[in-house]
Length: 609
Image (tube, rainbow, N blue to C red):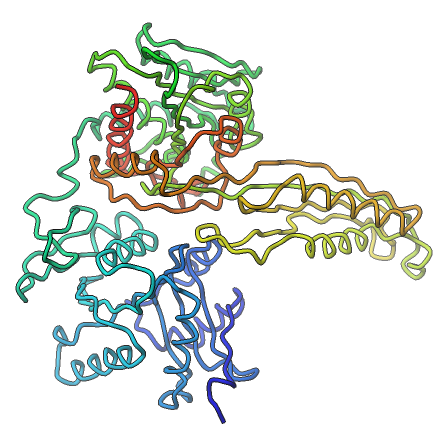
């Protein structure tokens, strides 16, 4: 029997991932090599990770866990077969089925045989290398020291160019590791003339010399080559003031913070206010140039989500407590750190004393975490109509966000007819009608289309309420849907389909009333990586000591409210980890604010001076 014909590869759901992790992976890999299960599940939910299973009929015989780059490439994190199936060809049959899914290429780490502690271990490691090479993987020449273990890096060739492999590998490590883990536990070994000369983190160098591989010997650390216009300690001092000013939802009170920011700037800077009432306001700082056309705008929100239970935090969430280079507190990452980078870069530009050729706008919005009130006001008042580009300073782990999913939140209300639980046929069950509506509407939502950075459109039921007693058929019910859309999907078309379905169901069931309410409607936005402005931002990152890596964002930002109205290119680029947003013990590295501030300064120079 053809072995391949009997095998299928399936994406595992969370329950199956837990089962494989606890039943197989924990025995296949030592504790030092095991990524915590909660992090695996978190990465899966964020679209950064995929867990595949190999099935022979109804029996699972193997698994592969992979990190994803969102562009058709992957890093093989874990790969193993059921012990009873090893040596029978399943491992060799599984890998080609996986490789088809990732046309850009697959990278894999294999423990270096040369660094084995004994001859037996060296032999075992060589067998592993030879196994992957039989599958078609090639030695990249890259070597890294990860958590004290030396690895050779292999790859399954695809669209990636050989000279890009180090950048892709580092992108995976930055995605899977916190900044602290990255700095302390990762080193790249640099081969030259067959010898390993230098070991350094990739984030601290840049470049490639003709005639050599992707590794380049550098006397200076890459991040030390940054311009250092914006100081880390200046960022820390300003962030403390912003975080200790409470702008938590639902009250917001952004006007107080906005006034503090406005006072940092001289009177030569125009200060425009948008009053939203009840202490809520948005602020625009306008530094006029010789021509209003072709200017640059930065945007960030002043409000934060609630702190939750302060007792769960390691410190007062509004104290801006500092530990080393990290500052803790609500809004440090999302996104008062980004505001700090905007402000410090603009102040440095003003200090230069050179008249601007083009306008510079700093926009500080209210209510982003709820209704987007401030961003909507900017999209409607025309102040930014002449800008040529927009930077949204949301936390992006210092990566360049080129697209974000849209959000369409719908609330459906059903009014049917009560009945005794023993006589459901004489009532109209509001809960069941909404369940039917959800099932039929889900079939209308195109969830199969894939995006290279945003994966798929998703739809989730996030609320379903109804019923008064177990023995009473419920008449009234409420259901809410959270739909996250790709740029290609029209929200108007979805709303038309939903409304039409409601009408169809009411006509089919006299006495049923269905109503739909739009709770949130933010379209997806996207800019091409080849756009001139994106290239400029990449150059600015390099000047600031940041390796420019582009990505997509699953969450929405003020860009969704402003970009459709302005029609200009944009990037979502800011300091801090986006995974810190809305978290207990939210924090940010002060050097991240400084590096991004340097990149902002470079963009201001290139466009406005």
